[in-house]
Image 1 (cartoon, rainbow, N blue to C red):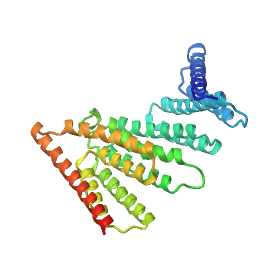
Image 2 (cartoon, rainbow, N blue to C red; image 1 turned 60 degrees about the vertical axis):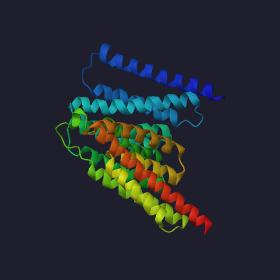
Image 3 (tube, rainbow, N blue to C red; image 1 turned 180 degrees about the horizontal axis):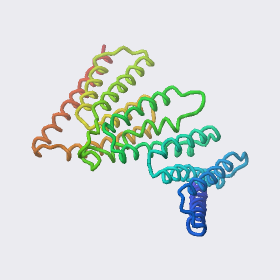
Length: 312
């Protein structure tokens, strides 16, 4: 089947699932006049069961698979929203979504649905931090990064790659929307230095592990590269250090996707960092020029060392 036909079939399956979910919600909320938010959880449980059943069919085609993913993902969200709405507390949806995610991981091997289930847990966790106005939110979210990185580099027997990717991406994506210049952080210290420290330690760990894997000793080139990276991590916002870690992970694993994502996020953080500095335009320019000089000097030193090593 050509890729464009697959795309049309997949989009059609998702649209069908969305229409079915809207119809179910309309029946319960409008026709049956049920005002309890637990009705959403009941509908969600039904959709979740239907979606998992579709995905567990051995002979399921593309349409059934995509509809199963959409239906089960919506069911997971409805179950979490139903319990949270009934309790009128966002945090109640967090353990519920975590339980649903575990069920999904146990009953299906579909990576897309597993990714969506893990992303739902991460989203509710982040929303809870903002709604409850928890201090040092950045440092708390940064604790997910080492867990995701370890699971990707040391995969367990059960495939947890979708959850590991979500854990690795939670902090940089969280930093895009929650930063020191947002409403959430105006009168609450959201932290950041612990997050930077975590990223620096993980960066050094990645470089050291790559060096050991290749059987190389720490020479001046590696030391210069690490020192420049640490300087960048300290100067940029915490999200910038997370983006640099993504690029280092992409280099170690050869992942073009993570490399592209890290570059895009880093450009965004540098742009935001430039406009958030409480400096005059001249001082901002001088600071960025100084960082550029340091990075170019490190690049020149590494290139010079490589040429000398090849000539020796």
